[in-house]
Image (cartoon, rainbow, N blue to C red):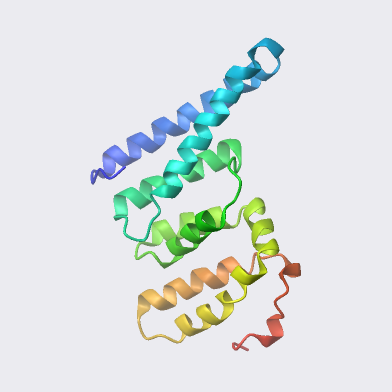
Length: 176
């Protein structure tokens, strides 16, 4: 995951994407045969393992190549299989931390993952987690550091996709 070579990262992401599509297609044919259900479950379990490993590599101290490849693989798995692991608070917080990354490609990929409907529903249920993001984004927007204002933009873009029922009254936001 930590290979600094851009061509290696691109080749690996492309190869795993092809492999995930083959897993999905062969798993669908296996699910139609009752005697082969266990193999299809092994495929799904491997994808869960991959997603969990990728989520582990989103730590704030991860370097660019590790975080970039982990986000790319998460995006491939999400596009191919959907969100296959139960959403945990730590995992979603790791994705939100990627919005503060200094590389815009990582921020964009994390934003796309956070806008997944299953994650939106998770944030709709986690009121305590959601409450401080508008104030945090507003504070970052007022910063003179370009990286802070860029992170604030991504936070605001993410918040516009929250379900209305999350309990935040947008009239109370400090920005008018």
